[in-house]
Image 1 (cartoon, rainbow, N blue to C red):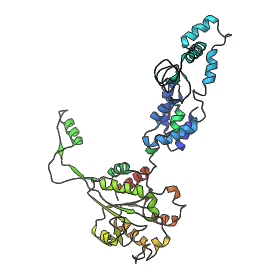
Image 2 (cartoon, helix red, strand yellow; image 1 turned 180 degrees about the vertical axis):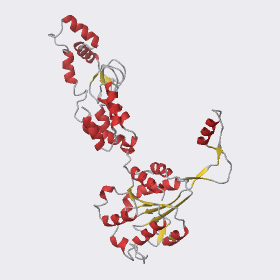
Image 3 (tube, helix red, strand yellow; image 1 turned 90 degrees about the horizontal axis):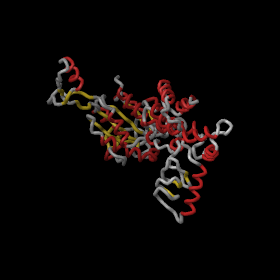
Image 4 (tube, helix red, strand yellow; image 1 turned 45 degrees about the vertical axis):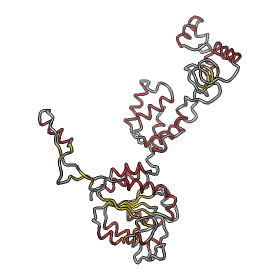
Length: 402
């Protein structure tokens, strides 16, 4: 009966495998879901979802698939009727009925209603907490917002939410790996952009775990510590960020990325420059576009080695003239003899390790104003969406040896 739920998860992008699905079926067969929808929600999530980044997709799939299934609140009237006469008299004798009712531990429904009426007659005001009167909180069998295993909710809202309600809250939407980045996520992602090298000099003061295990095994199990020199990250990075104009809506995320990049002290070298729409003769040291606070792009190309990894952040959406024509620079006072595309091509030729991160959702790359230039830039740079998943793909691309 749950087969379509498997496909619902796959449609939402949750990478569920057949092996995991069969594990869930085995868990259900031994009763680990405790015959409840909430139990199934948590059990299937624990078995099928490998990363918290897919929790939100799981909630969406669960909500869509199980939406409309009645909760205990909706079944209250039916259950009440059944409890009044759970065992048809034609099937059992009076003695057998009483014995079964005792074993089932069902409450005496008439007594429960009489008890409620008596308490309401005696109660002269609201009551909060406690275990007797009708009110809120506490452990009384009558009221709401408290707890009683066999109580009746009167007014208020259920606090023991059904699984569908829990799923519909989408508490994990910020964990998705296709959402825009923040400072912390970008910092963590940048740490994956590491390539260690061992220094030729210095004291051997760092424990080499692998060699220690190997030497200890060779030494018949007697511990033999092996020390080595500490390693340093040998990666050098250039970050080029588009600011202003069509990038204004992304000013907040760009500010976060700026903070994250400058907190990244684990690179051998890190250089950060700004540009507007396209790269021309000058790269700016801050977002003011002040030529007095700039460096010549030609000097960067000439002075830096080709082992730098280049990360460009921008929407690549501009007027075609800005990309393809001489003097296409939107700042009229700053003419450019070479078109912007020539500078982009020179960057790629100089720095073969390069990626372009686009804050625009990929689904808009072919539909917005300026999409022609996005397509041209994509032919020059490998372009990825500025999300956790997109950044992860970009990092992998940068680390591929050429």
